[in-house]
Length: 123
Image 1 (cartoon, rainbow, N blue to C red):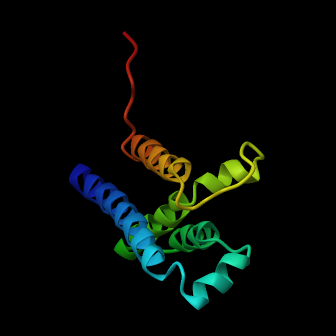
Image 2 (image 1 turned 180 degrees about the vertical axis):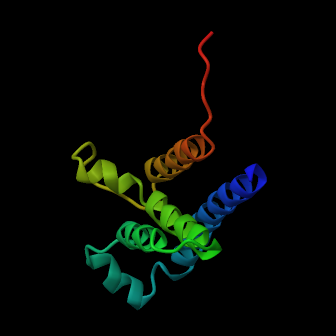
């Protein structure tokens, strides 16, 4: 039972990491494409798509659910900087900025701690 839960958590975590990497690569390749230029003017970000996929993943009880959950978290964390933008903490967001990358990595680290329930012991 423990190994099955661990394997499921590893699947979720690695799927989210691969999703972030693939999303960044795809957007880097197509960033100046006409389709992307039009999409950048829209207010729909893949953070919203990630949230929708997270909700959908909760309706399934199979391995697909874990994969969908990982993809949803990956898309959400890739634009985690927008959470701070929507809260009014920062004024503008550049997807390729160091600030955005640090927010994504920080969110991924926090997600890993929560997923694997790492308890930090105070000395």
